Every structure is written in structure tokens, then in C-alpha cells.
Image 1 (cartoon, helix red, strand yellow):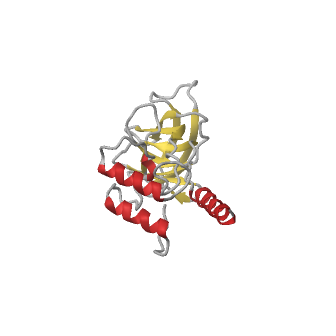
Image 2 (tube, one colour):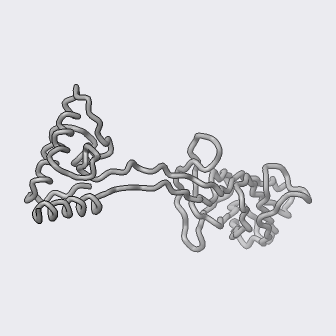
Image 3 (cartoon, one colour):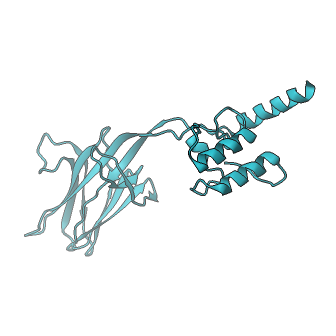
Length: 231
């Protein structure tokens, strides 16, 4: 009786220690994305003082991936075709049209060029909801062509789907890992048996397949002495 109780306690311990359950989580993604280009403008995107690399994320309502700069909050903008002593203005506004008195302004500034480059540190007041924006650069120089660069800012919630819960090795999903799981795994791989298994648990060695190597790994894990740890 005492031996049976110890065995039961060990089985419960293994089950609780290896249970792999992931809950769905909501993640709020914020940052600039899909920043346009101009031959005379270079831009670097930052979070504070740290430059941000672009990634691909679906951060708007469609099914495509956007060029996303996660957690970005400022942009260093350099106009590279400036004329010394000329004045250059920059403005970041809501929407895609020319700004009017009713247009939300996220950033505005002016600099005087001392070379062919004039730089702006665009540290805008960020919107609380996703928004399409336009960055304009204007100048006091004669015949200057207004620069306009489209970009967007995301504030979106992404729900990550939970991974199936399972105890590594518990193929038949009865809460313990024992010879019955070996039998279930062998029958699952062979096919032709009317059995139900936890699909998340059958790839024992985590090599992406389901074959006899998983059966061998599981048998050795249960036997002990092989130094095998299941994931």
C-alpha cells in the first residue's frame, strides 16, 4: 500500500511539473509602420535613443503584413538636398491631404540649413488610436517642391492563440506518463485503431514528425536511466 501511494505521488508530481499550458494573451502593438520613401530624404526610426529595426507584422485591418517598427516613438529625418542658409519646415499631420486648420498636427518644427543636409528630430505627440499620417517638408527657397511622405502609426491589440495544453509524453491524455501512452502512440502511428490521442503530445522528440523514434524516446523516458527530458 505504501509503495503504491509513493508511486501515485510521483506520478502526480511528474504530471504537474511537465504540464505545458499556454493561455491566450492580448498584446498591444504600437509603433510606426509602412513609412514611405523620397529620394532626397533619409529616415531612421527610434524608441527613445534606441534605433528600431523593421519587422513584418499585421497591424491594420487587412490580411497583409506591414513594415512595422515596434514601440517606435520618434523619427530622425534628414533632407539631403538643402541649400545653406535656407529655412526648412517639417510638419507631421493626420491623414493624407494637405493640412488645414482642422487637421490634427503631431509635430511641427523649422531648421536653417548650414550644408546640403538639414536634420529634424521628429518626436511627435502620438495618437491614442491607429492613424494614417503624412510628413511634409517645405522650404523658403524659390521653386522648392513640397516633399510629402506617407506613413502610419499603429495602436492595435493582437490576440495570440493559445498552444494546446499537454503533459509531455501523456499521449492518451489521462494525466500520467506510462506504458499505456507507449501503446497509444504505437497505435496512433500505425493507424487503423479507433483511439483518441492528444495531438500536441505525440511528437515526443520534437523533431516535427511522428514515427518510431518517438516511441523509442518515450519508452526510454519511462524506463529511466537514459537522461531524457521531454519538452
